[in-house]
Image (cartoon, rainbow, N blue to C red; front, top):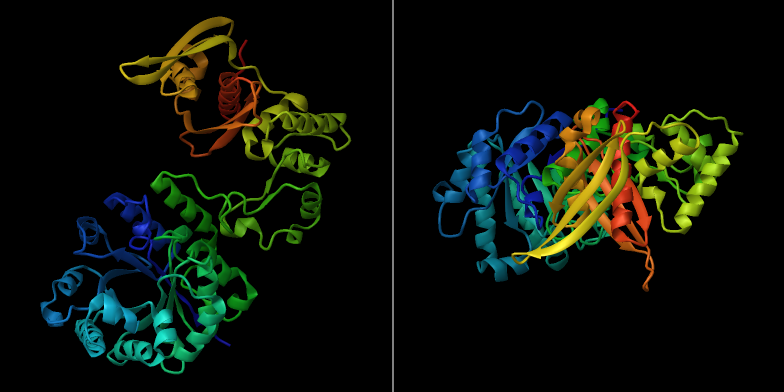
Length: 532
């Protein structure tokens, strides 16, 4: 039996741009479009040309796509003017898009209150807009806004709206759960009913995530007959977001209930680019990825409990629903005070440390981890600090930069609070005094070293691209002798981030420990020579 095709429609460049705090530049939109084209989604909605300068310029600059169909978004014509004389529709025709997606009302309440026109006027607007683009040989799609609410409020009118577009030549009728309030059982039932009037091969689903059901609603719609799914990378979108294509695409390919019956335009070998695509968006937005996202998150295949790790080592299927590499992700064995010997052994293997299972140093390392976590360390989020600790106990690690002493002061200068740092570093028995300032003690210490990299002799070339990405402080207990835990995230030009940690009753000392671990890890992973 031949498989039916599911069409993937990405709306990141428009729906995603409506996210609070997101403001795509032209270059951002072009990078995202290119990544989606390489991935192989069927449609890329570039935005609303004519509605804002960025979207208009994007359609002028984007080159022909190799795998995807560029789609321009707009709304049905306004009452009182013809489709030919509607400026909004003209702006869409003036783009190089071969597909057009128009949103229109399908909830009678919105027609009455939001548009303030008659129900027949709304049907006429849908009809004339559809015929206008079909006559221009454009692949036309009608996004039925608030369809599910409209269907539940006035079934016959909601159906008349989508039937009007379909009978006048629309290729796709997209049923929108615009406020995200519909549940999967309702979506399945309603889409199943709609297929009695419009063939499933012409139906799409556009789900918002306000009840955390956008992915479920999209998949339920497919099982009910819909053959197009609209969504965004990482579920980006207004309010709670849209359906997350980074979960939907691998589910369609890797879950038997779908892959036995359906195919998509995305090649099997491209599925392992899903994680990379997800993290590209976060990189463009300059924000930390959500590590708990299904399939693509850094914690999606992380294991912390000792019993879980032991089971995963025997058979990964015990706690992993797919092999992580299928989506370009990887397994992560977490080390913490809940760890057993199996966690430690698995983690040592993954970072390439040679050992024997009966080596007493394994027990020593486990006891050290638990002891440190008792006083405030947390190695489940500090991979680099754990590796340094493990290598110091089980293996060997070179001595790089020694720090004899340091001091940090804080002053108010011209209304600004400025931190000053001074540290004495030793490389090859030579002392180097480093000074710097910043908007906080860690920033000042980081700048003290960064601004004097050229003085660090053979290590200057290794530290040149080191960057401090994030810095977090947590007070672990209260009172005058409070313990402080500092976490630092670092990166370099290779794009691999690492995390270090420091704990002390003194926030400066805790910060310094985490910062020194970051330096040591950078030098170690780049195979820097030892200090003499």
